[in-house]
Every structure is written in C-alpha cells, then in structure tokens.
Amino acid sequence: MISEQVKRLIPIEVKAGKTFSYDFFKNIRYWNELSGNLAENSYVVFGGDNDIDTSDGKAISWKNLTVLLNKL
Image (cartoon, rainbow, N blue to C red):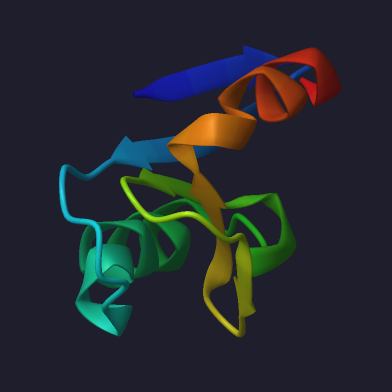
C-alpha cells in the first residue's frame, strides 16, 4: 500500500508473519531507491507484539496499526 500525504508517498507493507525479519523491508528498500523516500517514512505492519525501529523503517505491530493510521 502507498499512502499519499501532502505531496509525498509513504510506503506501508503488510506482512502476516509474527516473527520480525529484515527481509520484510526488501520491497520498501527498492521503493525508496526509486522514489527517494526516506527510511524514516517507511513502515511494515506485521503480526508481532512489539514495534521495532530499523535503519530501513519502522516495523509496527498490527496491534498498533491505529496509531500509525492516525499519524498519517
């Protein structure tokens, strides 16, 4: 999913896995290279319990999805 916010696109990828993997950001890394988007504006929503900050973006627990959506 790509969310359009005030003349910028924010990549958000949804993964079913409960165990975090850095591979979750593979497509987002590619998108960021093409678009020039910053990692700080990149998100993966996954089935785990805790949010995780990475150098590729932020992995958000599905339990905190509303927090992310309200932030956008």
